[in-house]
Length: 451
Image (cartoon, rainbow, N blue to C red):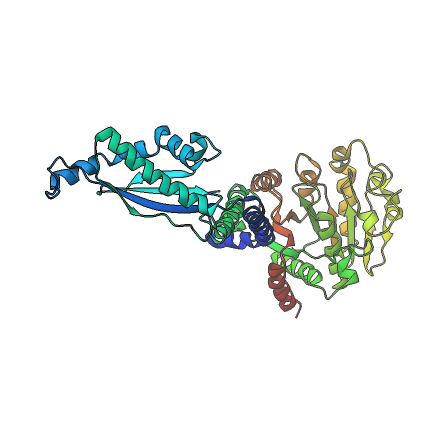
């Protein structure tokens, strides 16, 4: 991806709203459960001691040099305060059932910057005991300093009092952090997918990227298949999808305004992108417009038009190409749609490409052009197959159906290049399964074209 379109990224994020909600709920729920059920409350008691360094005779004022000396020794004093010597004495005097190592985990001793004051903080699950230990450390520390440095100027500035609330009650902060982590995690995952996404979307500038026009867009609709009926233009002619198909039909007529449009090949890059759905409904739309239409299932590998039109498939195109062309009429079947006939794919042959490139196939198409206004060929996907590339040179226009957000750019480029090598006249790209907002847009213009 050459550049990031911020607007498109935020539109892409809308698909992750549900993920945001789920991840945020799990994160917040987990934090609440941990803080209320697992996390043990700790109470913190605080006290401070001040150390004055003086070699002066008793009764004289403390000099600036004395203060500076005390500040420089503050770090040393802090280490002494949390040493095993001091902690073991505290444990012994308070009769605590723990080792000095266990006690040190809840003790924090540090000098206050630019002062000769040392801060002592003790955390314990018992509020009263935390204050008792803090005062005990201050007392033992003063006594040990007096022994080590022969220094009597150590005073406790504040007596530790029993705390009334836990010091580790951070539920509100943890919830905010959990929400932030959830949001950034989902947004980051979405951004990574968006950045690495190589799929072709209806919002892309198809003309700029591929030199192709957008012939039409078919909206994503849960009502496309009802009781196995995919012929939505016949079943629901006023639906959004039907209007999209009519708009596609109109666009095709405009592209061929200076020539006689007779044959249209509908193909795709890969399977399951909706080419049969588009070709069958486009054929119905042309028939509804008063045209005499024939749709031919040219996918001799996995053709399924016979199922869509609920027809037998024992006599289709492959059988016709193996028979005498004079018997062509017996392979053309009427459908339930007025003015629309069909030739199914027939028996799946072992050599579909050879049949489609045969002179007999060319003669069949040439003969059919004299009997129908519009002939729509539902071809096989181009990816890795020669079938539709062979047919592309025999028709007036080619439509490439892509599944919005599913077909990769490299695949569409390869499809376009394969068709252009045989000088195919590509009418444009048809986006299938476009989101609801875009469906409204194209439906509106479809309505205008029908008026």
